[in-house]
Length: 292
Image 1 (tube, rainbow, N blue to C red):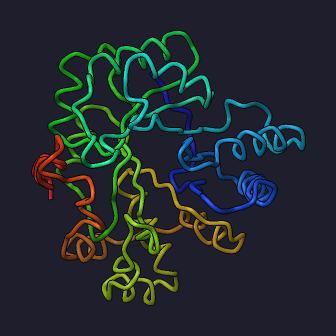
Image 2: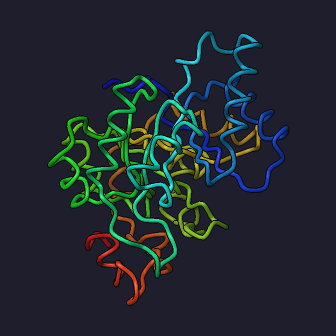
């Protein structure tokens, strides 16, 4: 169950507002710059742009085949029912699919049949429609439950990960099970409902960046890379794409990594909006299985 080799710092394509033509142009530039990992979802409204960008990149000779690009799309909560998985996947027709848990109206969240849903996803991979299947926002407990019946283990777990929420226990657990960790909100995702502006403002990161003549985002992405974590970083700015990809010819020292490990920890969002006494998830502890 191999995952295509891609640059570990990756351009995310989550966008709700960018015009299609502009988004395609930006993603073609990203491919030209060397990015090969694109994160999308039907809910983001960016799947079409990703497909058009890859087709254009092939036409321009920027890549030789579709297999050079790793695309992750997601099965949204409304489709986490066994009879909806394949239709939703065919609509997306991406080469990798993950399902998120849980995202829905808090009063209408109901326990879904994880075994039945995963069984359909396994069939999708076996049929060759998907190269890999994975999960998002899964705790150690949820992964352990999934592995108790999965015949194909998840290739990846996409989760919130940054210097202010390092999730060492979950990252180590995933690695011990051969599951690749992809971090989102690694730079904070300020301005998004799940984001925070605390990440790039951490003084320890500023000090390291100044000492190395790098930007704070570069320090963060290098830190993730050195810890074997893939990242999806949203940017439509060519200059920032260049900056984000310039992290492979230098390293953080052990002392610098130690300073980052000592940064106080807290989630960007606890997703309290999905908690309700009237729903299946009655506390944030239940939502994250105590991993707070």
